[in-house]
Length: 331
Ligand code: MRU
Image 1 (cartoon, helix red, strand yellow):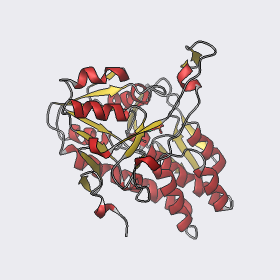
Image 2 (tube, rainbow, N blue to C red):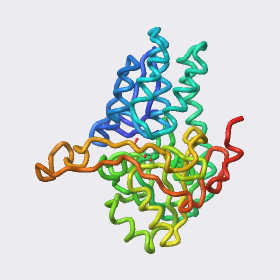
Image 3 (cartoon, rainbow, N blue to C red):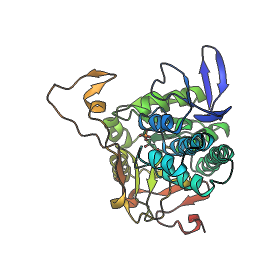
Image 4 (tube, rainbow, N blue to C red):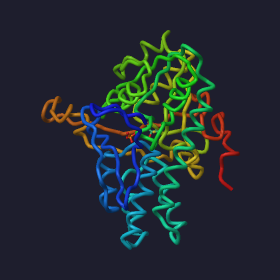
């Protein structure tokens, strides 16, 4: 991804490995500060996943792979490392997919396997971008939720990849960016990426989506954290209400995801575990308490959208109708 700072413009990935140390963009402090942090052990990696220094399903998958590589480098019992990494965040399927892959390849050089994994994610995102760009017409107004951009996917993005490729093809677009309460992945991260990429956009309060969907949105594209076999999928809290609004207003609703996000062992959305995060994320704003002392909060991090709301899943292998995933199942 293109990063513009006061020192100039440079290409970055969200996460990578250098001289045996994992490096990542600290996603907690963007857009006000740009900082690269170093992660040296699998325990530090588990912490970085849990506190969301690195976030977004495919980036979490790459972080899990690099965490396993760090454990392998230090001669740690890989089963123990796998257990710690699996316990960080329960919903994103990519994390479990990556840990399992590393365990099956444990007699190889795991740094190389993790690097290949991250490269593979970027290649899949490129193909998602090419497949998704075909759905974007010149002048389209697109709504997206949370951050399913390069930060969330090592590079390029899932929901944002079609927009990047469409822009390179010369298409004009306008993006409605849901701010995405409570952690503001939309207003802090997606807006930052679109600004760096020079794509026209505006941040909207989450509760303004219905207002704009009535007559100003042509397309919705979101990412996913876990897609069940029947096409129900988990994504950032608030996605479900956007899908219902899209259906009510006749706006096509697409989900962009690589094959690592598909969980073919989970039959339907009912079986997806939803992460609950700290109440403080809701009760406080930028570290400052805004709710009265004594009030409690509920903070489910994701919701499940039933497959009936999805027009298509934009994947690296093409665009699929909900539940018609037979050709995606690895043999
Ligand atoms: O809690 P987060 O920020 O990790 O949640 C991220 C999302 O919900 C994204 O939309 C999803 O991971 C898709 S990222 C390509």
